[in-house]
Image 1 (tube, rainbow, N blue to C red):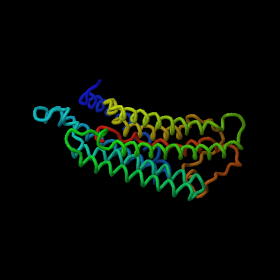
Image 2 (image 1 turned 90 degrees about the vertical axis):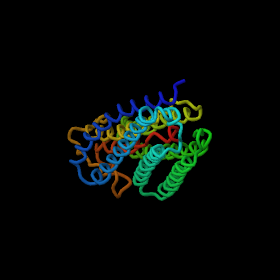
Image 3 (image 1 turned 135 degrees about the vertical axis):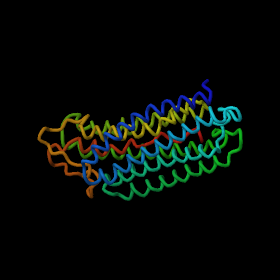
Image 4 (image 1 turned 120 degrees about the horizontal axis):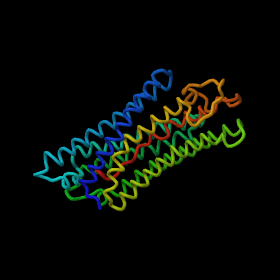
Length: 310
């Protein structure tokens, strides 16, 4: 079984690798978004930038912790004891970043789902309640870790809180993904024949649901089994979330996965966040690009809170 110091070094290496990819994709997406107007500048750029800031802060903290564990404090504390200290200040900040990232991403997801469903309060109010409850649980986890005694682990200190956090975040993702998929499918089935109208739904399910659900399930299983393998999987979370977010922006821009008509007008992102929940679907092909665009927020889902500092 991999030791805690080895798992932490592997996590740092993988996070650095994925961060480099995210950083490159961020600037490519930024160049595209700066040429647009409306919601894409007012919302997408700040969200992408916030994801980059969170990933950057997370990486810096991991570097500092590695220096303290393997260089500065190697003769006094030791790497294993250093990483086992749940109440360390840097560890608590890192945990707070894990809480903040999915909270921000979930709030955007719920808002987009609310707008897409004709601004229905039946969607918005329950979503906000679950989001606030999840945020409260997450930040209570941070406080609980600050009170942890030496030698304790997250599995013995707050296992119920962490499982609750994962469950609520997964609940938000599944419900919102289902609602978005249903709205896209319903609006598209009357427009075209064949299976082409199901393509946007598949994009939602695969990119928004499967990727997130698989990563969270892997982290949760590793946490419940007490495996140190959770640390690499967890630490690549912030950059991976940003990578997927920017990839979908690039995909929409270059129309990957869609087959627009050559003479079809290209609607801006604003259409999908406008005042009308139902798009004008009685025109020919303002096609799957529109549906693909509303998916872009679905995977800003951050890999969730788990064991390094939990």
